[in-house]
Length: 400
Image 1 (cartoon, rainbow, N blue to C red):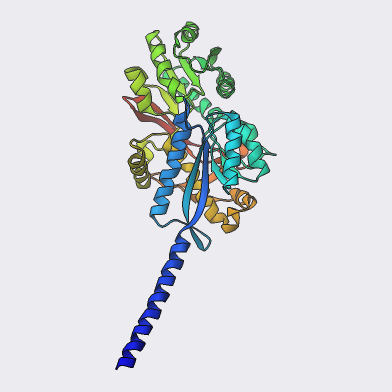
Image 2 (image 1 turned 135 degrees about the vertical axis):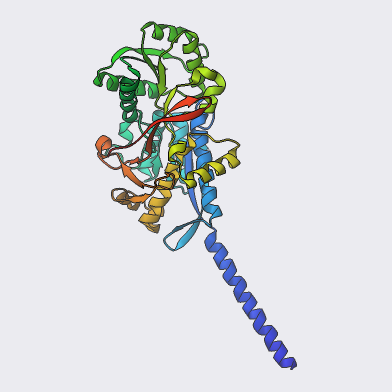
């Protein structure tokens, strides 16, 4: 009996050790880590772009991790998001890209402006690193460039759609453009002005600019409004300038429509401009209530829990990490180290869009504008500010 008891104890001990070993192995597998980068402007007047981008990526990663991680091939990975602030400085974007790459990051969301994305491009290309900028310069996405993928709708794609809607629905005939005296917004202004002229609109002013850090917009808007436009476009406007520009225009007596083609937070605009902001038209975001799926609602709840309040721009940014991970899953584990494998998958990739109420596909477009699939197929959502919230004007989709 004593010998039998010892044998029983020994068997239980061996089984216990084996079970513990299996548990440790499973835990080790579950703790494989995939680092993904977020490189953008996370401080200063443009922080409403890069900061929200970083927060969006972290919230989506948190949801994946809470569900046990992301399976790529036979391995399951915990997603770790590494955020780097480029401070809207081209040199900062270049060194930031180098920092992320030195940490073994092969896939990066951002940067947020043309100048920073162009600066980082050489680093991305030299190191075969994929990035998803929120910048509109066509040279980023056109061959021989191959590593950058536009994560949103470009101003030159959505601008003409907004202007045509204004012509048909608001009787707009005369249009004016104003922007910061900076390469990125000036480029967007020029693209917008050319598109407006092509539609037959009378561009009454497209040369007025203001300096970065301006707080008194009355002088520049007085000149602009003097040209008697029906509509004013705030080209490439940074989030901190939107409210003051709208407020100044209304105080100067402008009663026409106003818009921008960059993503904005309606609450922040309304806090500054109040009721003067009502009717301000914004292209960007992709989460208007009319098209939200239950999953998008869960993401909004997660983002709000993580960061205190919802920011509509996050509804756009979340498409970046989503399609990035789905493409890695489709391309397989080799793509984790070799982005050439990832790029081969772009042409035929079709994923599932979890954010739209009616479902739909996630895919890469851009062949018309860039000659290759280097753009994420986010919905075109055009909205107007109403008492600190957005109300949708219309929803469209990108043509390829």
